[in-house]
Amino acid sequence: MGIATFKGGIHPPDRKELSANAPIIDAKVPKVLIIPLSQHIGAPCKPVVAIGEEVKKGQVIGEPTAFVSSPVHASVSGKVIAIGEFPNAMGRMVNSVVIENDFKEEWTALRDNPDYLGLSAEELREKVKSAGIVGMGGAAFPTSVKLSPPKEKPIDAVLINGAECEPYLTADYRLMLERPKEVIEGLKVLMKVLGVQKGYIGIEDNKPEAITRMQEAAKGEANISVITCEVKYPQGAEKMLIKAVLGREVPPRALPMDVGVVVQNVGTALAIYEAARYGKPLIERVVTVTGEGIRQPGNLMVRLGSKVGDLIEDCGGFKNSVGKVISGGPMMGFALSSLDIAVTKGTSGILVMTEEILAHSGEFGPCMRCGRCIDICPMGLMPSMLSVLSEKGHYEDAKEYNLFDCFECGSCAFVCPSKRPIVQLVRLAKSMVKP
Ligand code: SF4
Ligand code: SF4
Image 1 (tube, protein in one colour):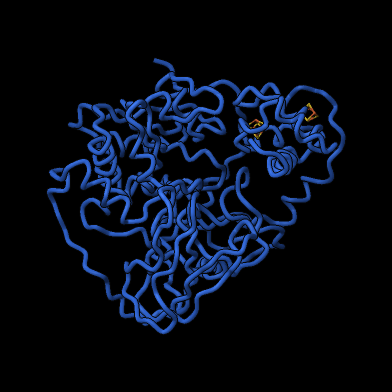
Image 2: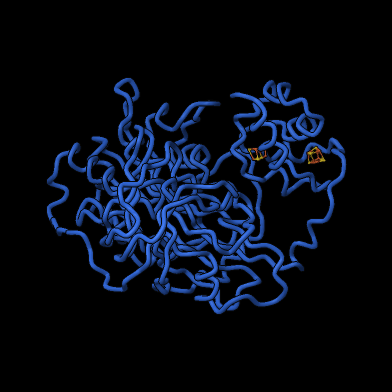
């Protein structure tokens, strides 16, 4: 059988060697943490603590206000010293709880239940929900919602996304090397919740060690398969991975559940295992801190609510002339305007790009109609038309070209010889019209 893949896509330099060999280490836990009450897609949480209140690690500090939402927990023990609005990675103001750490590390009650797979599907789903687990690959969609598909959309496969196709990022790679058994256990929990007989893990073939470790961990699990995928961006996008691993086409505007699949990333699978077994809420995650502008690139286990600046200090600080600090990877990440932004459930990486690297991006020109962007768009769109229509302010017309099918992977901008900011123009058009 050939290596699994999809149509279109690109091959940007991946630069993963900067941090791939750095084992996950605990980041320093800061004195003050700013914990946003909206770290997910959906309704923000409402605070359920007051200024001056003592909190324990793992205590709920924000409760969901809608079905599509997810609770937020204290990531340290200490005292609530403020509740107010702070900017997030996208520059929006978000209501947040500020905790002063007492460094006592006092947990709310956790309980080890080695027989977690003996729990009912409903009990396990509830554990995932109350642990505040969301998709940790970046999208931050509440996992409990994905685990509650409508009856008319039966699920027959769970797919763990181990592609980590964004250049530079290595957090999932390290988890697959260091905690493969727990990732498999998380997959088994997902399969039990959804009543599914078949589980898959899709990994790009530039990660042979991760493939071997996951295969070893899955040994004896007859209904779990590790699938090797071609190295190609954006292999880790849900629709691309489903096509590559299962050969199923998710139609435009449809969701993975429409073709019977639930996709979760590696970090989320680990969090699901910890919630099922120990009742541990999502209060920390692995973040890759990397780039040519960081002195010691690495992979850190970070308490949510730590500031980006804390992580950069942990990794030896800046080196060379810093051009941009990005939350996420270079293709789909967001440039940060401040180092005081908090790490959240969806923060997969902090990338420091140097001025030298950014100098190659330069100014953009008109579309030359070369068609390169059309050839590589994994969604089969016409990025050239989308960008031209948005540039001219013809946002409604962009809908005719399936504007909302674009998932902003950035492949088109990467190959464009005129360096057109296609993704920014797509985002602008999306913000101006209704889907
Ligand atoms: S149009 Fe959208 S989906 Fe297509 S390559 Fe560009 S960013 Fe990716
Ligand atoms: S790659 Fe750039 S220049 Fe070529 S058609 Fe697409 S938008 Fe136009």
